[in-house]
Image 1 (cartoon, each protein chain N blue to C red):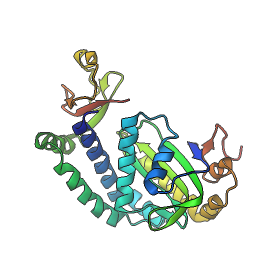
Image 2: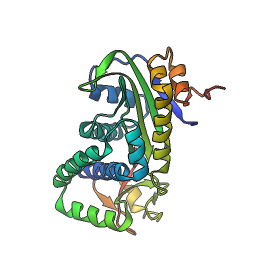
Image 3: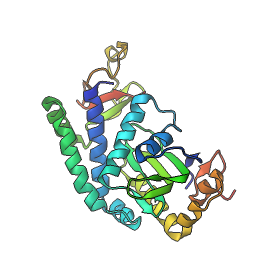
Length: 117
Length: 148
């Protein structure tokens, strides 16, 4: 898989982690388990900044714009469709032998897409 | 909580990172997926170790790389450094990112918090078999529904 795409997926999962721990219900349950979600969020935000700084500026800006607009900037391709907007992807996308070897975006919604293994 | 779980009963790992990798090996992920999930779980552990009870760690996250709940229980006789504590039971889970939000993820955490706080933690540390450990957490192990 393209390294930049790997970083975008990791950034997405890190954002999900931060958002989950900031969610009141999850935060409460994590505290019941004896964890300290608030301090974990602080650390995760630092780690996010570090990861984001290693991503190409163009992709990072796109990611932030998409995440701000849709809530999710990276989505898997499921049944030949972008799972973000459910648009069927053009056949040219499927002709490639090297899926995930480059950063691709959905031609309809613009989200970053990747093929599941 | 009718969720399927996999169990690694006699873990051989001697570090947190190896233990996470050993449990991820139970699933049939492709190499890249496994590496990215390992990174996500380690990131959370680095931010804050998920020790939920003396001797029990609970590495967990949500990820777009999975489309169903992935739950694995691990038990180590000699214990695994985590890294400042020693754990002998690991409850690892990864839940999918869905458009409906994190409610299912939250329900699983809530279920585990209730179970562990009501004696389940001591019970699972003393469990004598994989099926018993799964049953304490009310997970389905090898197709067997708990208390069936």
